[in-house]
Amino acid sequence: MPLPRLLLSSTSNPTVKHLVKMRDNRARRRAGRVLVDGWRETQRAIEAGLDPIGIYVVAGRGDAAPTHPQSDAERFVTESAAGALVEVSPAVMQKIAYGQSERGVVAEFAAPEWGLSELQLPDAGLVLILDQIEKPGNIGAAFRCADAAGADAVILCPAAADRFNPNAIRNSLGAVFSVPSATADEPHAKAWLAEHGYRICAARVESSRPLWQADLTGRLAMVIGSEAHGLGDHWQSDDDVTVDAIRIPMAGNVDSLNASVSAAVLLYEAQRQRQAARSN
Image (cartoon, rainbow, N blue to C red):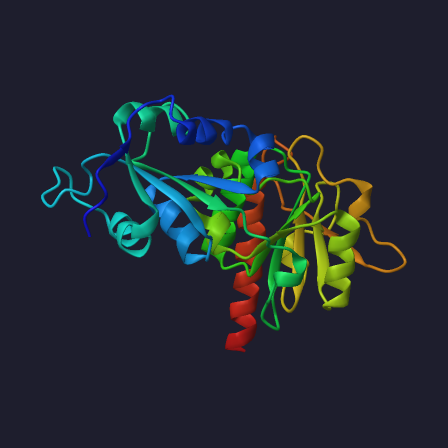
């Protein structure tokens, strides 16, 4: 389907100014908006049910005989969200895109209201909990690992964690949209896990129990903390919830892994155990 003709050519256009303002994380969150860069990431946002407000593409990309081959993601976006497409000049795209290089499309969506109550998990759900991880790149990479390893959900603590930061979206390759997720403060997350019958394993470098010796089957939540501070005391056992501490064995001189690497190791070991249990 052909795109509309050039609509936005001036960087002083009010819509362009709005999109630039939405690059400020606080302004974006106050407005309840998500900005997505890239065709693949935009496709995944649409597939996840996000409501597109505007999808901005460089003028000429919708010509009948484009000078570039369209990707499957680009075709999906231009066909499924044709009513939201707006052509812009190259100068406008450079103005509204994230980072130093534009990726062909910038899409604005209404932020979804995804909380704990919206999570619908299988009987033996596997949940990854990211605690106090502040760097958006690490959040995005952890989502990417969760998607690859088949985790059923990601919960971010505290509730202020920003899974829709543009850098998190980019580093996740859009997995922040494809993996069910929620944000919650730690007491609410623990209460929700207890209510739904989840065991909790927390990755701690000081634990004497290697993850190979832990039972990672059944309903399970695996908690990883920040590289700088690890997990705080709030993920210890209390009168209401039991938290089992496990560690990833480290054979070298370093005592910790990148948060997303830790997530991958834990999740893949959990899936290995689950597949072995099903085979038996």
